[in-house]
Length: 259
Ligand code: GLN
Image 1 (cartoon, protein in one colour):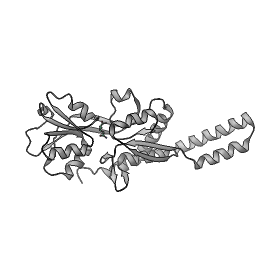
Image 2 (cartoon, protein in one colour; image 1 turned 90 degrees about the vertical axis):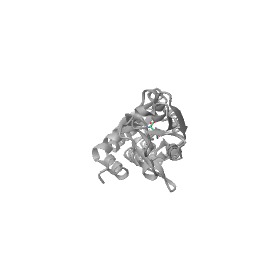
Image 3 (tube, protein in one colour; image 1 turned 45 degrees about the horizontal axis):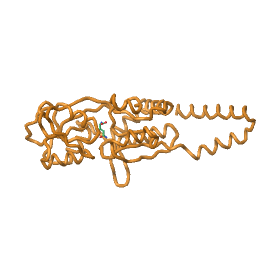
Image 4 (cartoon, helix red, strand yellow; image 1 turned 60 degrees about the vertical axis):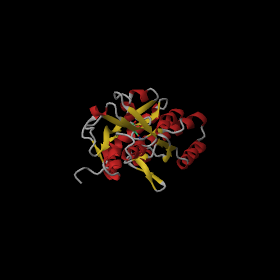
């Protein structure tokens, strides 16, 4: 709402300026009118293999990130579109301008900050360890020398590569890593906590270890040269947080453990 007001003030300012510049009130006004029809489209790059944040449901991509980003676009008066791609293509897509934002349960890291800006954070997350029931791995320290599955290019991948003597198997989808664990091709999977719960729920004989590997935070990636969009996104996120809309979206996809 506030943002709309701000935008309309900007539009008024633009009209006044162009009137002063060329004195043609008519054309300035009618162009602005048409501008309403040709809304800018906010393009979100994601990897829709990450429930409950983004995943396929029939022909649609749904989840917390998908709904949150659609609400952000709504706040900004923009149309909205999702482009599904490999996780490690998201930052290049944002960086090159192919997409406006990257929203993919993406953890803020120093490395990524070299290539993109991040919005204010919108969720706390953890990396957890999934093992087979009855496994001798009881905590992250027991991963030494084990075969550990991860999703390629994720923070889980980065952390696993630091485990002493571990053999890291990289999969394109987190789900494929979990499948490999079920088939005993690997000893453990390191992956984000919420997707872990979803994958374990759907599999048999797997469990998540109590001790988390790391704590992290998710944010929206935006091209470094687009400071204006960064501010807009932060403004929209703030109003979604304040209005309770963001909590509402999260509650729709993450049922508290008590339920
Ligand atoms: N949070 C992890 C990361 O940013 C994984 C994200 C994902 O797989 N979509 O690397």
